[in-house]
Image 1: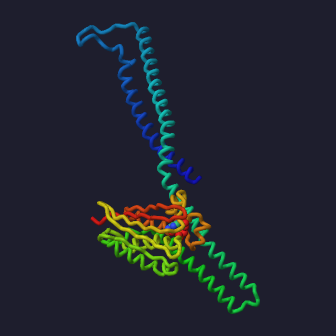
Image 2: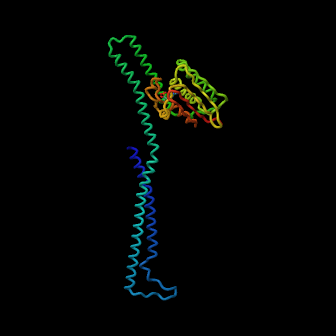
Length: 342
Ligand code: ADP
């Protein structure tokens, strides 16, 4: 509604400017035309001529002169009316045409702002919803505990432990939200980054989670590949993909990491043998707060569906691409391309 009003306001402004210019020119044209007409049809001077410079002067009867004068005056009047009417008609056509065009242009101008605004509102609503869930869980637990007059030390400790878990979720979520909102990957200083080294760092960071599920990594990087990148951002991006491969993969499984370079890009593939996802789910996993088949995903871990949107933000900031190929029940392969360092 606000945007409809803004479109109308902007369209009125455009229309106002167009009509101001059109009316200004029309007045000028009218004035010019009237001057020309008056010069061509001059009732006062029409009979003051003579044939040549030396020829005889006309001698016309006063009645005829009067009639001619009246006729010339009527013709001048009609011609002025004609010009005025045509200009008014032209301005009316411009008013209607420019009105429609202005509204179309105003809507087009405001559409990206409207979309950004809608995305922002959706983001705020989704974020608030995700934040409310752990807060509500903590509140309920604390209220129930406070109503129990015979609360033991053991029960209190259990409550605190559970609260601590919810707080850890909140911390993870707020950290992710902050990263998404700041979106400053790539604006940091870029440096020459050896892919093997950053992948190694990412593997080390997910090692504790991998140990719990007995997941092993097989890395195949045959050549040295160097990209111009924000090192921390790239490590974060690989950590997200590897973390998901562990989270959504079976115990005692292998995750394969392949990296190679074509003429322009480094191509990295990370393949797991996990739960996979359906094609219609895979289309959305890079969107904020999207969790494929949420009930099933939630069983696998306590994600919020923002990890991959941050990963995409990082890849986009490097002019790279990130895609997924997946089969439900079979596993997923994430492919990342990053432009090679020049
Ligand atoms: P989350 O924190 O929920 O894992 P992500 O943004 O990292 O959020 O992932 C979005 C969703 O994509 C996940 O909820 C999950 O359903 C799906 N997903 C991501 N990686 C994998 C994977 N390797 N295998 C299967 N599903 C995956």
